[in-house]
Length: 311
Image (tube, rainbow, N blue to C red; front, side, top):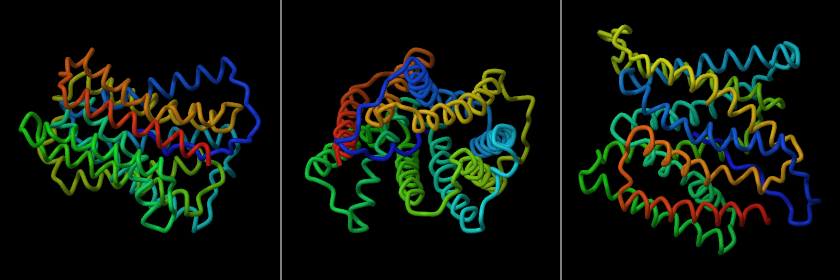
């Protein structure tokens, strides 16, 4: 899944230079994060959802923590009790709730449809802000209303029986939890080093995923030998490329000279990449609700992101 939209920037901010390195990092974020939905779909074909997701994020957290310790020194991993508690809470919301329910949902929902449903995260963030007293501009409200209409269209395959409605609702719940984690992360004290914070969040969410998997009985009669080679390769891809490389590229973009408005485009490019990959590699059908609802949601997210960056 994608991470929170970059913070808004002033319209009077100086123009930032777009270098070749920026375009490379942006391309990585586009393709890597857009491809994670495909990877998840391949993993859950033969692996249990929560145990595989938990393994993914615990491993990615340990790899990222090792990189932080090597690059910045072991002291960079220090965090106060408040920062650690906040990281655990945000990690449970983002990784266990947000990503975990997507993984569970993708056992019955096509990867492209899941990506489009999750693309609504900026919509839910605006709703949460409005509930807590922030008054968004009318253009943002219009974007939210259009986005909700798009979600209604995307939900129709579940109502018609083309896919499991329970899977669609799980992914929708995941997007709400991810939005809540995004919103909470902007309010709570987190480690100053974003890589450190991400490592703790992934570790907390990953451990939570393993515990939920055990409680669901996913380990009962588990036959590791039945896991396909494709699932193993996809899991390794999600750990090293999806979690570590994708986040590193994103964090570098936020600290580089890249315009924030350009970085924010990942929010509506990722689902397009996910739908294309699902169709090309897994032969997922491009039905009219996916095409129409997806186009509406992507348009709405584009309106919201462009409006927010002008604040």
